[in-house]
Length: 195
Image (tube, rainbow, N blue to C red; front, side):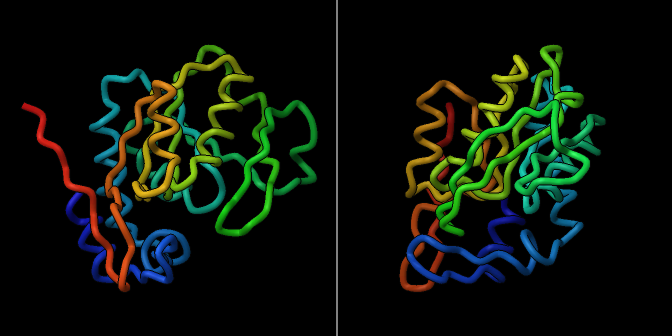
């Protein structure tokens, strides 16, 4: 998606060979027009997948997931990372390790919102090592729900997560796939043309 790639190039900050900061438009301050374009793009890519719900993780996955849900006309559920006074039992939970924050969190959703009758699109802002996506897949397996696929805004293609998840047979759609972060610059993967 060209608009996203241009935004990454103009506003993204390469902090190291593994860290890209995009807090000016995605995961702190949000660019609503870009999120709307992202929502339309994912809705187009998964239009034929029978999606009934979208699942993401708080908090940075919420904006693109909500815009996709709005376009598709389906509810969005976000897994919580923190315990809540109102979310205490009747839960699906999974442990997720964050390499960025260097901590493990238990993510949870109420069993009321995803059932075996649902076909779910998982979405997230970044895919690096794949732990968040694997945790959300685990939750869907607990619910006996169908997985339509995985929508990722930015993938760090030089890390193992995307490859690991694709090798398990899951459909992953990525809008901007990064080949490397070197010398303060972002290089995107070359897109292969299907003939």
